[in-house]
Length: 425
Image 1 (spheres, rainbow, N blue to C red):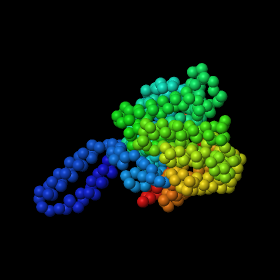
Image 2 (tube, rainbow, N blue to C red):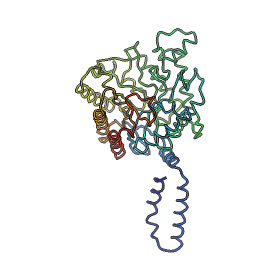
Image 3 (cartoon, one colour):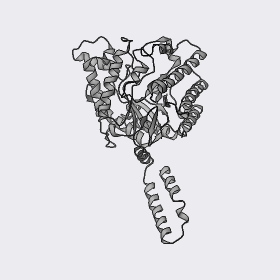
């Protein structure tokens, strides 16, 4: 509401001093009518109109663009949005977090568009959906649009939380099929078809609140194929590479409006063997940051960063050195090898291993690297910390949560980054 009013006032401030009778009366009348209309436009509706007017974020070389301008952002993870929105009693937490995020300049959020089998499942069985949970996701997309927050929607989990690839493999077993491991998710034809069916169900879903199909909704920033893909049974990376090629093409065959990314943590593979030295512990996990992201339909790269998890037992100096090299190497490769933007899809520091000062220092380091790239025209367009929560969500705390009311120093750092990223011309 305030934005619309200020914009109108700026456009009319010179006319208010006009002389000449009728022209002045007409101007005043127009102003008053517009003001009355504005007073009946909810803040959320204004944000959605502005978001829709801006259209879809697109890629141009190593940059994101929106309305012919480079698009940079500060963002957050909140995997739990659909889960909480599917219950009317907890739905206000979703509104509260999106409203807070918007007020703190956080304009992109990453969340799950999956919950396969188990408690409060979206996909109860292959192709069978709980409408109550799907309406929860409708609410998330609608509320995000209201508050001008664009969503990265992830379509399946590598891990067992919320079902993930393991649940798909269990469904294959129920068909009487033989499988070796959960990694058969990436290669078994039945598992792949089940996953494609889920892609289609989500992308073509018509939102029961807005009436807009997901594939046509600019409130969605991008699709993510899978959260943190890994394969313990194929270090060569060939299996996941073929899966990415197939699934990326399938997503784009349904929806060419939205951007697409894979969900990678950033581990290097055999495409550039000399880069494997940058993997924590020289580890191979079946993905390849270079070849996976070079797939034509993949619009941007991602990396995740958890030094205390990846380098257990290491000291602070070793972790700092790793963070610096991980960021530098991936940003350089995004520019020079991939020719695509890159986003830091997850980063954070757990309260099990930090003080607030240490967390603030870590966020500041991450934010400085992101801003340094963006402000110099580089490919790193934004980052999403893990994770934002509302007050009263104690049951979902994982040690990484940021709750604005409880974290004034961290909130200031987030605010500063939001301002800096939005100020890049």
